Length: 269
Image (cartoon, rainbow, N blue to C red; front, side, top):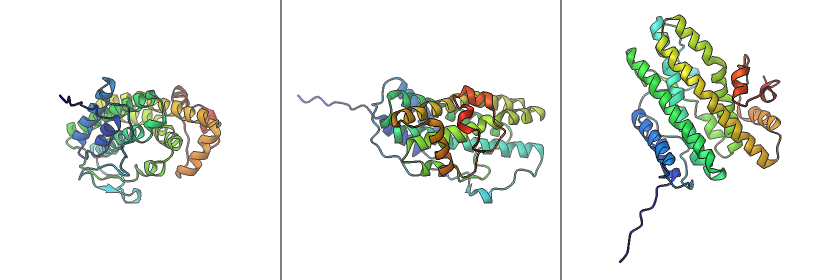
């Protein structure tokens, strides 16, 4: 008698499913499911499935290039806050895909702990998105109600074939920039009496320190394996792949807590 063997789904398939799920609520569910199944040992540590060049996107928000984005300086205090929260929600929505693409695209090149870390990041980015979308709905709006920035995936496409470049730019530049500016944004919301949004952003800020730490940790793993000086290599990658330039002020204490010491970024402004 032939006994059929049920094959365990792979982690690569699970993360590709996240990337190919366009609608926000469904993407959040797929993200949570992938991370939960990995933690419970229900996914094979196999990363042979190809990742999409660009993830599936919902019909809304309308995606605009940076020069086409409306300025947030006009409108009432409430509409300005909604516009800023919407922009932050979009960043977190794209960050879900960035985390799972990190796992699916580069997981085979690293120890299992790499997937542990970035699947955790992906689930936390999904939670951040949910918290911000909830605030939008409480304020009479929702994610997709306003246009959003279409350039956030550009860096992912440019670094799709180099794990060290992806780590150098996404967590160690883009997310680290969040450490520099988020506390000021928290204070702006507090000053306007929006304590709920301030609380959400403060939660995101503390989670992002850990995310930047994971980026620094695995970037230094790459450099050790390649026998490359991490500070010099990082600066070279930033000059090559990040056209915006790094601009102070820097939150030195938060960056240090994330392992991103001044040897990395001082002198590259």
